[in-house]
Length: 302
Image (cartoon, rainbow, N blue to C red; front, side, top):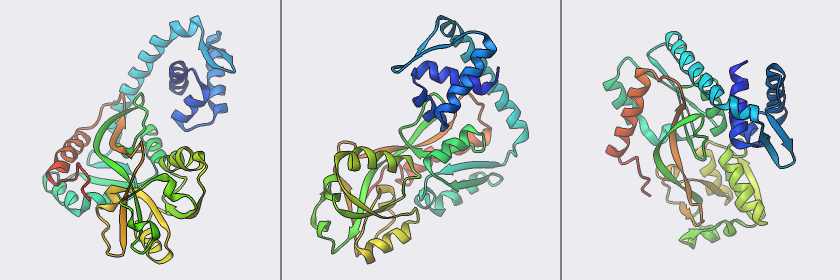
């Protein structure tokens, strides 16, 4: 019995759905089904009754579940202890969404280094899914990313709320409006961070394409400086967050809040659940949570 088998079984038991289980681990439905089948063969009993409606746990699965969860928790704890011995104590690896480092500014790093001169912060700009994958693979100590997140696998500490925001040139026909809605984007040229990010895919599918709105995706890029050059020179509309708007002021660009039922997302610092964090990691998280409000970074002000 492998830890991966237990992870898939426990999540499938909770969701009663192969597709939702696959999405939580960023793997294919076939991979989940194959692993659960292998576990059933190893145990000599069916764990689920399968139908078009989803999964129904068998009596055997009901009996197995609490023991499987306890086994996995103990395995994760022991693995965490083993990882502590192997990791370099002075390096903290963080996978963060684009422009988070720029939002924190150099002052954050100066201040942290003054208190912790022997700790090295290794920050990798990443997509939301890649950041969570790095946590699951134990290649990162933290991920800084937006919700929705799976709190069965991750510890989630909110650091600020970020609103959806739109940038357009001062002479764009929509620039006179105080706020813009998704409907205002109909038949417009847009740029954004792109489909590699879950947040972009979800909003495009649910609120734009799903509502019959047509948009011309001019480009998908994460470099905010290039994106805003395109806004100024090509009259395209940039879709982003207000934490980016707060640090990008230009007389030829207008930032507008998106007027929508869901107006934004929480930004979290996430860690892996059921692991023992190193002291340096606890120090960093405590420092970040204290530093943000002192420097007015816990709330976005435009």
